[in-house]
Image (cartoon, rainbow, N blue to C red; front, top):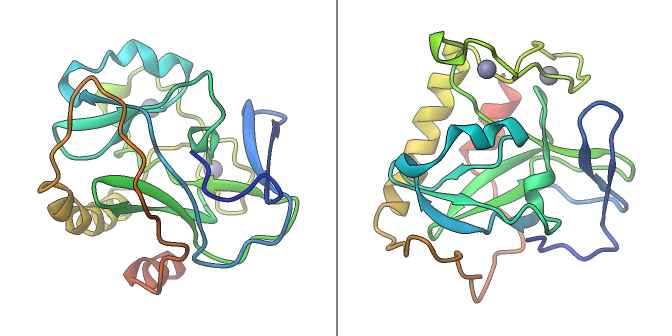
Amino acid sequence: MFLLSEDYLQIRKTKKKGFGVFAKKRIKAGTVIGDYLGKVIKTADYDLENDKHGLYLMLLTDEAAVYPDLKKPGIHLFNHSCEPNCWIYAYLGHTLFFALRRIEPGEELTISYLLSPKSENCKHCPHDCKCGSKFCTGTMHLSEDKYQKWQKFQNEGKKKTEKVKFTFGKNLPKLLNYPKIIPKNPIYAMISST
Ligand SMILES: [Zn+2]
Ligand SMILES: [Zn+2]
């Protein structure tokens, strides 16, 4: 679900990556853009065949994940980039997307999918990256050192999420209130040092 109004965002086809989300107006650093809503499922029950249609599963904890309704436009349409301008923020058992820096009109909004380093498990790897960034590694899989770094950071957020009770098989309900801005937190410094 988008939390910014339609004046700010546009969904359109990209050349190589299917649909993408673009800024229509300048978006300030820290701005909360959306909440990753969908059905709460058991991570273990997830059918990996679904990944053929794109990577949409969002992990909330080791056990719980959210799968969005692909028929509705939403922040699941964010594409992966090796140099993303948005990031994930774990908040009360939800996954918010926020702007890591100022985003100018016309720019595509992107996120890192934070895929684990390439391994045997991904034999016929469909995760080539076409982000077009100067720093593109050609794959959505992170390098070992980057991955370790994010794991460490995400685990901090996860600890808080573990206290939240999820109802499996139901849609994750909207929160009553959302923060407008994610204040300065360690992620800003971590990103600029990559
Ligand atoms: Zn892969
Ligand atoms: Zn890339």
